[in-house]
Length: 129
Image 1 (cartoon, rainbow, N blue to C red):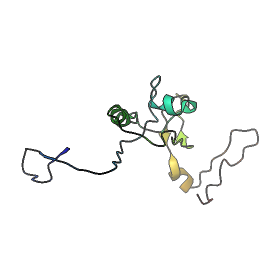
Image 2: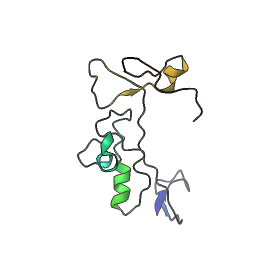
Image 3: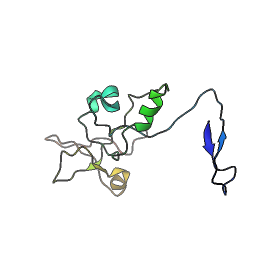
């Protein structure tokens, strides 16, 4: 059951409606910025706990936690995106959150390089995916 104002947008009263279905897909956003001890990131991908994220501070999985507390099932929770390109603030190089620089920089000629002694390209940016 949910409240729906679209039936009469000029009314301040909300009519209750029922929507029935065999499956429900609830999309609430990610959890890659959930840095709590034993939070969603720790529970599903503890190996990524120390990695910085380009997700906003709101990406803490609150909707997932709410849904699972009410009995919802989840799938593919181990699938967490780790983005390889982010700006590093030289004043705070180890910050848990970084600003995504994404395809914009690669689009104007930027390349991804390893930090090895012999730097090499990290990935073939033009390869089909």
